[in-house]
Image 1: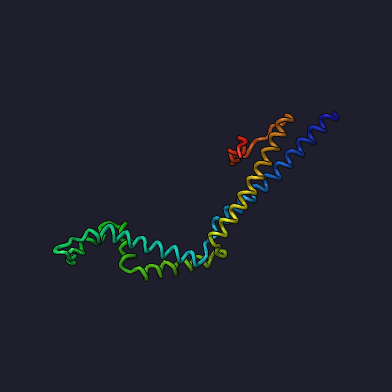
Image 2: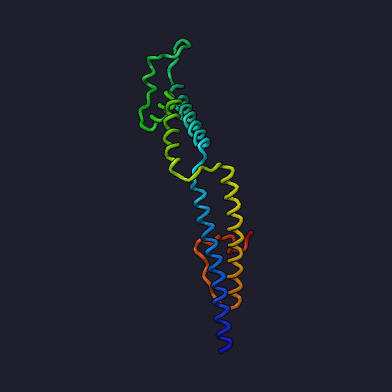
Length: 174
């Protein structure tokens, strides 16, 4: 009887310890997801929009206007109609080429309005630093969880692994 109580006590302790670690892992994974979903700073949003508008305008320039016929070394403006986008996909490129400042301004305004409804913006560098810190803590916790599972198995207790356990940790790789 004494041995059965001891085994039950060890099993309960091991299970409690693993559940505690799993709770910490779950909380860190949620923190990681939340951090990934936080918006960028207003400055970064504006810069990305500007880069996107410039890129679309350049693509339109390269794919459509560069094909304008040249006669006697001069572009033929009457052929401009041929460069007008014939497919819907090219319309954003066309508008970015035609009115880059206005498109960027409207997009920035819409993005800023949307971003103002979300939690504070986070700079990419800061986000990456915080994500790396969380990932380091997460790896430590997952290794601890695996050690506890292996110790339990050595004692004859089978404890199932999480479905989302990192394979490299389960396989003992670092």
